[in-house]
Image (spheres, rainbow, N blue to C red):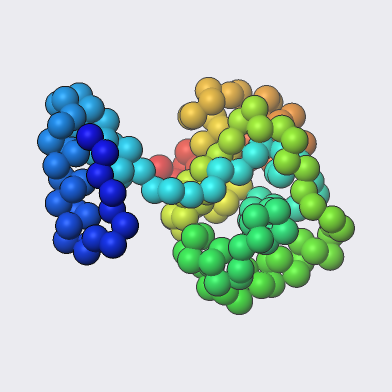
Length: 162
């Protein structure tokens, strides 16, 4: 069934979508609902965290230089103030020139993971890598090019809070 939606009202488009939805099997309907609930967003390659930047600086710098997002857009995505994003970007810019290395996409982290402000950014990153990819702390320290003790202490702080 092919429907042309050009020139249709929003109400007609919604009705057309509902008609198409009804043609799906129950499994396909469930899959459609699950997929439609997912937040569209950016994924961050693991390699951006290997530079001499804080985790937040790496994220902000990547979004600004590689994805060409505005300060306001980044602030909205990360649930932070635009002034925080501006100062974070300025600090990152002082540390590095050019763009971040995005060559290693073997592991990616959804940006939405960092939207919650409940835990610090590095803590969130470590916990995500540990739980989602089942990595040991030593592997995480190598992956992020950070000192093992930094990773261990950060993870211990997280475990203490929960």
